[in-house]
Length: 301
Image (cartoon, rainbow, N blue to C red; front, side, top):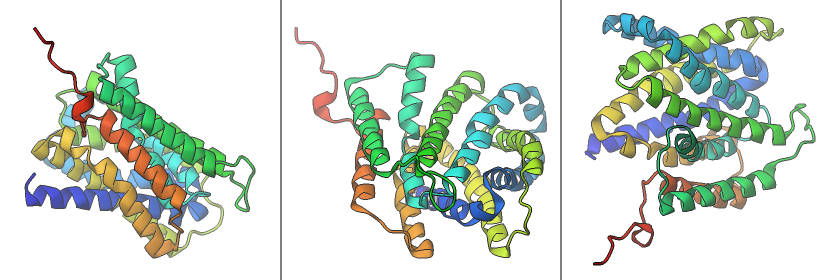
């Protein structure tokens, strides 16, 4: 990777890491449904003019059905679950669970698309999910806290969101291969906006929302969703998906850093160890790291 590519990778990790900070700041006043709805609406407002300017509106119309499904799986529902989780668990912890996305992606691709699993990938899945179980066991409690939300359900919400991301990845590969990435990104946000419009109207906060929460959600939609999507697909085009997936390993670092700097969130030893185990498993399961001892050897004549 060139120096510019590395810089863009770090910038993307910083933007996606900041999304957990912004959700944490806005979830209390907006509530999960309204927060997710405003996020995708702002992202759509940013991406749709760019799509039309590039003359890809017809692509969106042609593939609207699979794009709508991917929008539900990759944006509407996961954003809703993460917004719910932001009510009771820290930004750093949410981001660590988010790092399991490639693990679910590998499992779904194996079950649905019949992608092969090498010994190193199987070991990575075992290690990664063991890290998730250990960290969740340490943090999960199904007794409601002062905010009325149990941390256990927040953990379940995060893991459900990452499972949906994994399904969305295989759905995109199955139904949208060859479709311009900008059309998929824009269509996903537009679909999520449509899907969440009525629920957001029903569950819109009764009390006025502060300027701080509005600012956080606007930054969430512009920086951590619209710009981040464009940057991500740009990286895929320049360095390939195998290298772009490295952003998954960096997101928790930035999320924990932002949470510590701006929200004074504690960084516990359990979080550090759990994050390390999950990242190790993810790097193996995605093929980003391939230990020589686990690689298939040619047969000896």
